[in-house]
Image 1 (spheres, rainbow, N blue to C red):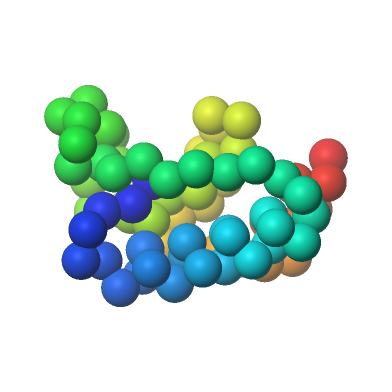
Image 2 (cartoon, rainbow, N blue to C red; image 1 turned 120 degrees about the vertical axis):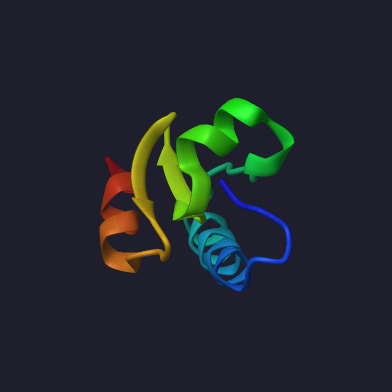
Length: 72
């Protein structure tokens, strides 16, 4: 989950892209401001990382933890 003009989101997207590309894992970005329900749920916690629809973390990518989760 991301939003426009969010420096932390840009950094997290770059990390997710790099890690997922290395591991061959598909990923996507959703703009929380494009949906009122997402905006209400995630508010100011963006970026939020979901794995299989379940919240994994927010604000930054914890690389080793993220890699472990993707391998499972």
